[in-house]
Image (tube, rainbow, N blue to C red):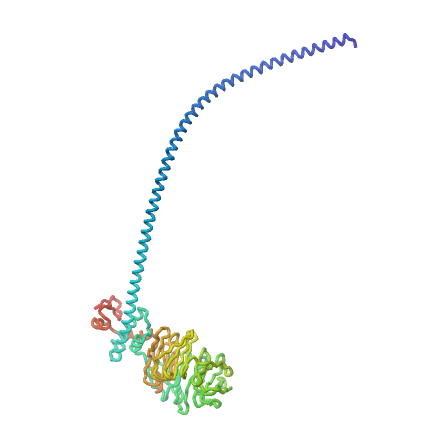
Length: 522
């Protein structure tokens, strides 16, 4: 290519570039002018806004200043309020301290008042207790005094007055929880009840008696004169049927089978009377001499016959002696201990029979000849009666008490709870209350002739007694039943003169016969 062409093209290109640059520059300058206008407009707006903001700032500053002034005033006021509150708090603390002090004083005063009230209550209770004790002792003593007077009036023949005095003696004793078995009380009500009966039935001494099973009015008795009798009680009458009477026999014991009602009477001349049904059969006991007692063995239908020197087993199915054992001691007395036969000998020993071939021997806990014995598994008591009339009772802890009251040989003993009943050849039956510290005899029966034996009916409300003269006696021993009989005999109240004389003017009058309306002292 030619140089001139190149230059031409170059100049042309330059012109084009210059044109383009001019156009671009124009366009750029115009844009800048617009931008400057916009900035100026924006600056004007900002200036106006700044003026507004300054104005607002000035206003805010003024408001802030006002608020600071108000805040300072409020701060000062708060300081004053705090100081006032602190003062009020201090005042409240002082008031609280005073209130606490007053409360403590009030509590102290209340506690003192409570203490004084408690002391007053204790003194009142002590006074009431002392008065109660004094009243109790006074009325118990009055009851016993009335009982003694009742006994005197009874023997003097004044039966009505005796019953009235007995009734009141009972009421005072019951009301103040006294002992109904105290001699002066019990003897008075027992006499006034007139609840004993006596029937001469046997020609010879009654040696034993027992009730038929499941009855309280049918019993059998035997005598040493060869008599076997059946008795049935009807009111105050006793109907008797003589089953056997033969003086060649000397019956010492009778045993009634509680299951079938068969009974066995043992004669000392070696015979056994067996009653099964209506007939009595006499069975000779050829292998045993001088039998004295029939005992039931535990868990056996055989009977143990105890003689003075021998034991024998009696078969109740065949009515024969099937085994005999000789003893190396003399039997003086026998009874039962814990449902087993017990035998006492003349060497100061006792023998518990578990079977005819097993006997446990021990030394007796008391000295002397034992003529009566009884024990109670429930109360743990054992009672030993002696030939000289002494009675020893041993409790479950082994403590021995010596009871003096009988004047001759003790013949029979029974125990019912804490009551021991003993009979003697001195003609009395005594009751001993073992629960008391001082045990005194209370005579239930005084017949004037030897008492051989006694038993209770199944209810234990009556005692049945056999004596040396062949008399059969019934004595009511239940206190509730006795007092029923006494009250049935009381038909009127005490007159004022009687009350003042026997009871006393200082004792509030009370009727003993209730009429259903309020009674006042006449």
